[in-house]
Image (cartoon, rainbow over all chains, first blue to last red; front, side, top):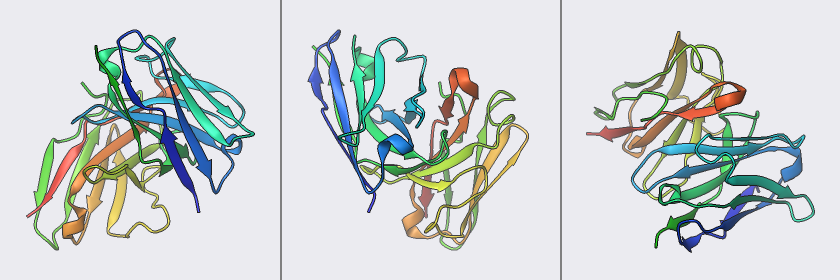
Length: 118
Length: 111
């Protein structure tokens, strides 16, 4: 059974850092396209980043230069390193497996809440 | 402001059909057949309902269908059921620079 479990969310001050983890089971992270999508409280979905099976990475303009997507093949885990956090980064962060490399997230985690506030 | 434009809300009675539109530009919806639709119930993760404009993942009811014309994609739900009440989001590939954009979401109310 495919399962994605995020962790690492919490309260952080503006300018701070946080690393989110997404532990996968039932499939191999390194052989798939993996995405992060976020949702601010009461708002819509926003694509954040994707890592391709070959290692290529892409980012939304809103996080480019501040966030880094990566994976640990030995742990079958996806990560999102978030630096220089801003209040507008407050959201539930979901990891997802993308079936074709863009727009096709067929499995999602339950989400982890990141709150950026002083 | 979302990159793709969806109506804020739509409603229909059980058994009826509704259509949700998703309007983009020639840089996203109009250029690629990578348009998807997600259903999200309150407090839950999104669920993929349609991908590549009109394909249905395994397990998704055939009451859900997708189409595209020019810069506008559409999701049609036929035979509305109470459990269809949820938020629906469209998503489109927008090229290697912007990559992926979502619509603002549409709240479907089953009367």
